[in-house]
Amino acid sequence: MDRGAAPHTSAPGGAALQQMLATHHLPAACPSRVVLDHVTSRWGVLVIVALSHGGMRWGELRRTVEGVSEKMLAQTLRTLEADGFVDRTVAATVPPRVDYALTPLGHDLAAHLLPLMGWIVDHADAIVAGRATGTRPGTAP
Amino acid sequence: MDRGAAPHTSAPGGAALQQMLATHHLPAACPSRVVLDHVTSRWGVLVIVALSHGGMRWGELRRTVEGVSEKMLAQTLRTLEADGFVDRTVAATVPPRVDYALTPLGHDLAAHLLPLMGWIVDHADAIVAGRATGTRPGTAP
DNA sequence: CAGAATCCAAGCGGATACTG
DNA sequence: CAGTATCCGCTTGGATTCTG
Image (cartoon, rainbow over all chains, first blue to last red; front, side, top):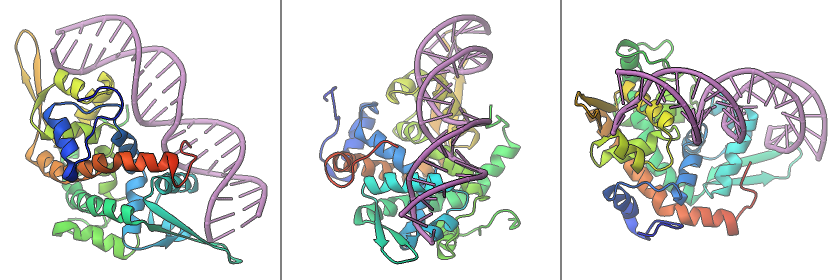
């Protein structure tokens, strides 16, 4: 393995990850860290999941992803667009209309994200219930 | 079981998520938001992925997940343990030895996380490269 | 070795106001 | 409608120190 810049090999099916796991080493300088931070950002997952069902306008997206502020939605959208996950379409009409949709790359990512989200939604109440009755660590220090 | 505060149904395969997507509504008061925040926390994914290959001691985990501080590792581990994803085993030896391993629930989660991580690692360099040279500059908000 | 505790910086994220 | 801009609190998270 190299130790300088990008420790990865062009291999299919996450072989590079298997390599990392085998050597017990998740490098800090790996490009995947950046992408991972974007995808797993507070609103990143929710936006991608929301768009996986179909394109949406700004307002609809804001209403769908309940709790997101305008600033965070814009910021998340810009990051995801820069990463090539989201496509932004502007219609130059008098009432400005902007549509957001997943790119093919975004749909590819969503295909991996949806099972995870589905599993989490499916198990969330049991997990949260287990936290309440079992241990009480206190999330906020 | 209750449907007052938690908009979900006990259905397999993420049917609850499909329901949310169909109605274009990702509720803020959904328990999955909490679990999602834990799993997609900065170090949560990396710790789970690291442990998916097998149990580890504290020091080994700290070395494997490169870049994590002791505080964050401890905090992440405590949260994941409280959620029931990670099991903590203490050996009362003179040199203290503590082992961490995934619970069955944790392995179940990892099964959904590994394909995602594999995909990200596989596409990370292309995505990061695309950010720098191709589509849209202006990365850092 | 495994962690808890403390201090402190950075930036995440929200509310509001303003623009095109 | 679809953003951008600014202010600001609060959490996140790192470095350090200390303990069993």
